[in-house]
Length: 336
Image (cartoon, rainbow, N blue to C red; front, side, top):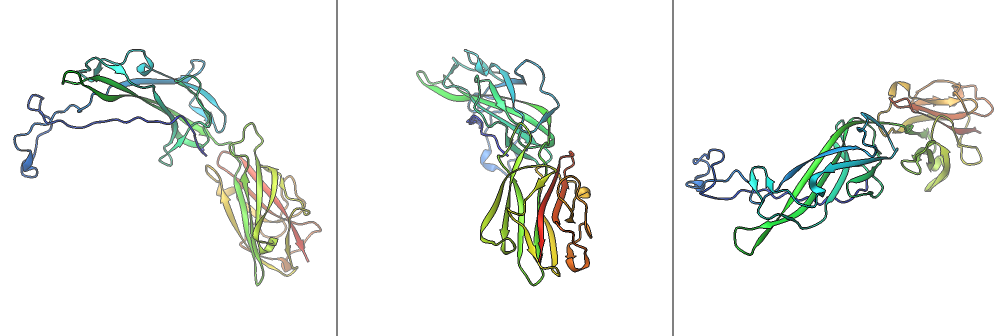
């Protein structure tokens, strides 16, 4: 689910307590613990009048936001609230606001809440349309989340002292529960260590990020002495991210001796949830389609001397996420 750059949210809610002999009493005071409050009555009302207005969120065409939305697909959402009215509210809870008037335009913020990770994520990478609209792009997959809009607008009202005024904020917020469907394949690579030899690793990176429409693409990075890339990285650009990621021998290869012993470890993962039960890696024959393994699968150590190596072998990584997106990458293996 990967960021939102949305309109900045500048809501400042000013709540406080005022000492007043005329206001009704709030919670009882424990004078043994707070003797300095003896004879003091605390108002249950905030010092500044801060009205809260209801807010409804729906799609541009007036329909309700669907329970499931798709990662990286933009939606135009609308927020309906009286905070945009010409005249500000005249009451905050049960208190009258004396001579209220708007003092600034409305500040708006849209974002997603990922309840599974207990995190907030920006919900848009574009500027808004009308003040109450936003092109929202859900970039972070989640099985349980919500799209949320918060607004704040500064208002001014008359103070008790003649000729003076006070500043406060009207606030408005709303949310709709959504599930964000994952459409990005896993981004898994391998770390390879040759016993008494060199080591290296390769891993894919989605590029450009949050690409839509499909297919998604990735650059594959190779680093380490095994790829003659100690002080630099070799980059294979523009592979389609999915089940047929083939690196050509002219671009880069794993060069090892025929009796080499390889220690292999999976690196990377998925932007949502990797299905570890479907994870596979090892050595296979021709690249493309379903990998045909040669020798052991998912073994952390592979001794090449125990295998019958075909003419054009590959090291492969086969990974799927819980949504069903799949990544299979083939890297040439050259045996000396």
